[in-house]
Image (cartoon, rainbow, N blue to C red; front, side):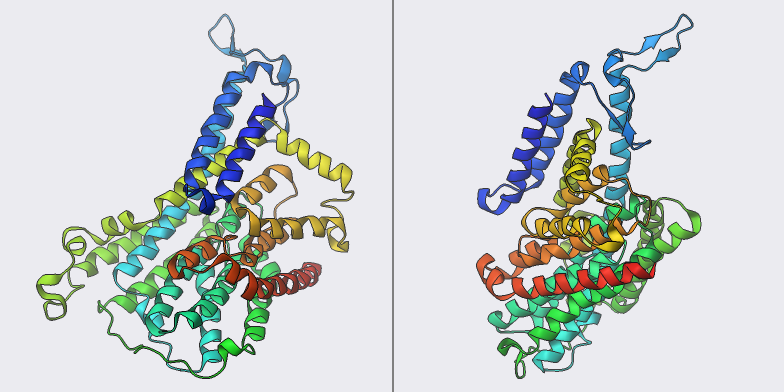
Length: 475
């Protein structure tokens, strides 16, 4: 039965990586493989001889000898838990951990959509006043690096490419900017607990803390962004001045700047709330969403002036509150994909498959996890994980690493995984959520990106990795 479960997972994983070839949204195979894996576990539960206890991070003793159902004593109490009871507890545990991530993401996505409802990102567009290509390159790279650390790399990419489309007429030039935005956004997301889904998973899973994450990864991530941008500034594509559209469009709402700063401040507040209260991050995110929503409702009544829009005011804006409208715009397919993939990986973890695989790695690659300060095999493994995240989705890779390795919180292994998984995806256009959304918005060709941008991403990735090997010696 274990073989069948691994086969189903492998087939689902393959379908996710071939999403653009088979034209099936990756959330579909993720949900199907999650449901089938757990169904197979339920059908074959009696035959399984091992089970992984997520609370103790170890295999349960004598799981194979346990009865299928609970053993009830004469007073009606459970004297011995059965395998079915343990499976239900494990399923509920993983669902709870997954829900923490999903609710957190829902809150962050809604705040970003509320900012967009008030046209808050137009404030960023109006900062760009130069026509020199290299200066605009650095402006977009630095904006992507900072924004992605606050509103996540996917959303930052959408915002900046939307701005790019409004100010740069020539599509061939925009493609180059989009490529560097992808690199910068992924680099910026790696050093922030709210900047990338995989980093958020490690943060919520109590593998990294905000202070150490920034301390370990800020310099490597900055170099991962700055080195490719510096090299690109000497390329022919970024020579001369740009033929730009007018960048001084009037914002659609007089509250656009207010909502931008309020929304970004509310998201930044979440790690502070977690450090202060020690509550899970989603609690702080819900508080931030509530505060932003209050101001959004207050401001929405005077968002549009009759002279600007008159009778042509959008039906969506006219009949929905900002919060309802923003909730209707969030990326629900992404949320369902994360649910499917995280729960599918949880199925492999529960059977002890990932635990055994980690043991195999430790046997075949000595000193894994203990020779980190001296480089060696362990660094190569994590670097390969980064390269792998460019080929296949980084979410299941990090989810698997959470089940495989059991180093304590803030161990440098987790920070290196955060860096590699977060920035390695830039090497291919399909290797990150930022790359995929840019590909869709600008119709970027896979092979064009491979020829023009991939080598820049690789250089940045390696320079950042080398910098990490230096910064970890400081802690």
